[in-house]
Image (cartoon, rainbow, N blue to C red; front, side, top):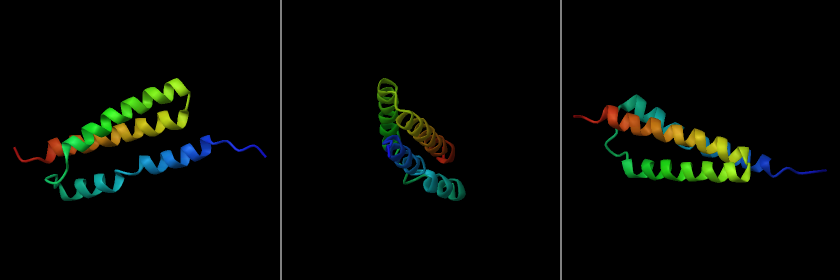
Length: 87
């Protein structure tokens, strides 16, 4: 039986993709962004860009797709931080 390690990557990728989902829902519901760190999500954006590039070089669809999704969840969090911060 041949085992494809890409399956492990896809499972790990799925879990990474949903990492910020509970925070997104909580923030959307409460509209409270006081404790959200912009720096954390900027680091996430930078790291996902690097991981996407790595995934392209390694031809790893699990790395590419995971990091595209995580990139957009970080964008959503930054958008909510901007949107819900009192001006």
